[in-house]
Image (cartoon, each protein chain N blue to C red):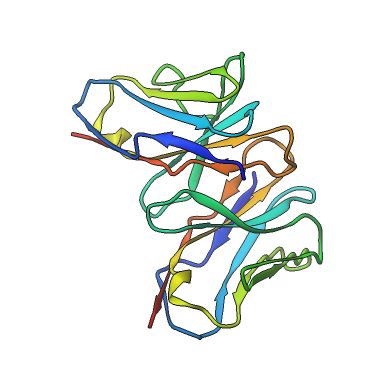
Length: 111
Length: 116
């Protein structure tokens, strides 16, 4: 079945540091890929998505590129802020209803 | 934008009692709703898919008699954990999908259930 693997956290960075959160997936066919973010006390929010190979999703300074050859969708941001502290989930949609999620990565940004 | 309201945000109940969690789509009609469960440090696992006016489809390993799902209207789905036990303690989160949105997976804020 489909699965998503993302790096375990917590990931602790200083403000303005470069961020990478790795995500790899296993799926049949050509899934769509997502990054969701969950800020403290809030629900999941779609951060960005990519629906086909080589697509780059971007939002709020974050970006991720759909790499079919490496089955990856790593999340990056050039300069993180304290307000980026949250839990980030990588997910895929394989064509059936419902999403398959990774375990989530807790990101902590220190001033 | 699309908003999904989930209540309660947290609940503590005694073993053997039942707990109902509500998920409402506030500004759109949700033809399909999903219920997920997350154990500590684990992925969100899809429990069931419900379509308005029909029976829910449960994922393998999820007890349908224990986790009752009702999707009686286009804006409301409920999950009832019946005869709750401590092992049911978890984080439950709903997601609604609208036919009007290509990627209408809008999530509720989740419910932290603790069974004592």
